[in-house]
Length: 276
Image (cartoon, rainbow, N blue to C red; front, side, top):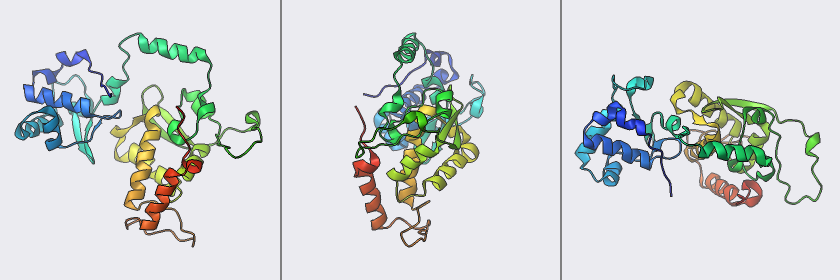
């Protein structure tokens, strides 16, 4: 079951002087949000989950979208949410989610450091890659799944995979490197997509168009998977066809494109199997 952190500081914030409906709507949206702070619903859906009249919910959303000069957070002029494609993005969600209010998380991280277990050894797909530190990320070695090969791999002889893009992130890691090795894994996972072009558009979106949408380093693979899937659904950044021509990116993908995408996602040799 999903859960959300609720900082006790909310009791001393300017939000807590708002009417009851506004407070209920905001907490409901927190409970509905994904790990990146996206509440994938609009006023009618939020009204059902909050058990409030639709008119009150729309009024509360307008209050939360507006500037608040009394807010302790100066970012976004005190605004708490923003209407985006797919619902509402909650500002500062990642900031409060990353807060460590107890010693439990610190002890867990210490045990992970002392365990001396390399997480790279268990990577089977881009979704399973976990970046631990900036230094490790910069020196990330290309991981190849060799399910049909009996030859041992000499990892020490492998040079570090070059970094193709550096994405700005929030949290302790300020940048996240997308290496050539990981890019190749995405190419296998999304064979109908020009992955490099689509990743370049994602970088432009995070740095220029919507810098407030930055993700944590841990959340970058989830973000890119969603970005690539939406690009394929919209017919954007499609890879060249077998005839050497690139499909028209303005049209929707054909039935053949969608079928190829479906097969790629279901084929364990391309998509990999998640290890438990």
